[in-house]
Image 1 (cartoon, rainbow, N blue to C red):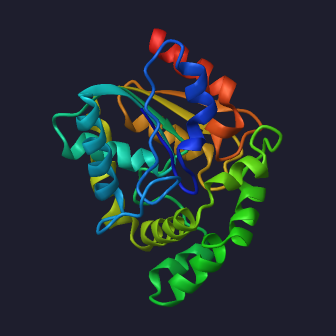
Image 2: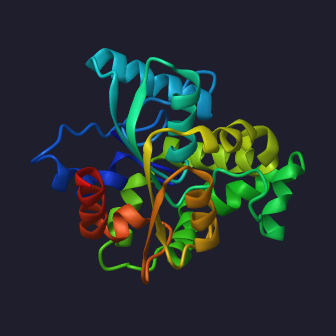
Length: 248
């Protein structure tokens, strides 16, 4: 199962999943409110998204799987593991995601803590196509593979609205939002592979190294000349890394 981040949709993992389906059953959902899914009613954050994915797996009769995640998909996947004991992630893949309460937040983004102003700021930054085009320009390094024409397929009206809400909520209180996730890292028993872009605009390779160190026996692969959107920028290399990890 592949879980995307923000901004994103199931299409984040499209090229990787297509390369994997010759040997594996692949499940590539949209998180609620993204891609072709309906906007969530009620909880749209980690626990609500995790509950929706577990409901999907129950419907499909899947009790365990390899769980590959990117960005916000990482906290969603770990929330599934934390809250739903009937679900088992045999292996776990974490790509360019934050799982810590004290990750560095640049000063302009700290406005997330200021009521009213935070909504206006994040609407301008990630709640519209112009702002997200600027984000794309800075966050994507391999633009030939991850072109703007492909990337903007994520940008449905609901997807942009959800991206703004999740960005804003995540940065408003990292301790409240990520505390339980950070505390569970040392107890993860799933074999874990960490994938990172060496030029990630949001999370430096130091965060990737810290993630590897926090999870017992985790492995880390850093991709050269790669930005934040590793599955879209390096699909062939990501596929090879996951295949090798599963075979090892």
